Image (cartoon, rainbow over all chains, first blue to last red; front, side):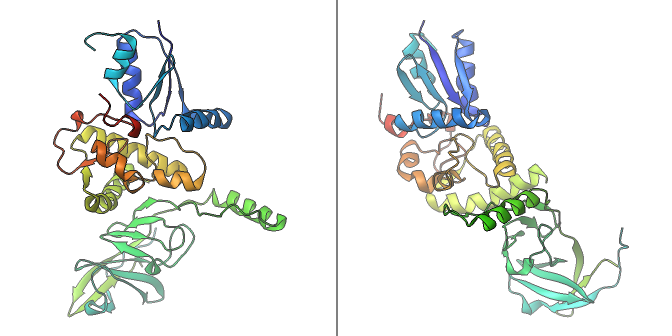
Length: 84
Length: 136
Length: 111
């Protein structure tokens, strides 16, 4: 099973949809709500997100693949989920 | 609570304020503002309930008034405070220690300041004048 | 301060900015109301209505590019996907916003 983790914002509806997608497909994931994190964590995430050239959140990592934005089709493809 | 006054006083001539405009007027010793929102006139106290700035020096967009000092916003039809002050850009230069300490203290005190709604007054038009009934 | 009053005021100001840029509020009313609710919360916390879907960097120069409506700072990207990042605004000809995926600029045109 691929490792799924994400950086999200508690204020973002697309981040909630991303979490719902993985929950609905019984895919375990970890997440950090950036806006609720401490300064050091925010700085680390900020550097990582900048390096990837991402505009905003949700920022989803499926193993080494980074998918920015709510993109259920790509999540499904990365995880080999049919008919998602 | 102040009693509501039925006494209207002449504040300003209607043709002295263009639509979208505001003017400070003295209503029997009360500093006030009259504004023209597309032909409907509203009146309210002159001083911003954040830090006392003269609201007539701000901007009016529709019925939304923005204070010139820290950009708090109000609805002139109700006086309701819609938003508080906007944080200023103080730049990145290092301040002299005494100034830095002063700014830090002021910042702490300002964090306790609340932006309240402004008091509004009833208006009516009479013979080319905007008349206002300030609270008694 | 009343959130509904503030939302109404924000809509008044935002419409004037996004209209000439070729955008309008999303026809998805539920999404619009939710995003504006978040912006009111962000404004109360930070003093400015930031985008609910972009991370604040605590660097004023960068963060000011995320003040709603942030379309002018992301014009090419948002014109390409016909929506802004959080989806509060869409191109004026958009009828069904559900057809507009949230694509990052580097993903535009990717199958």
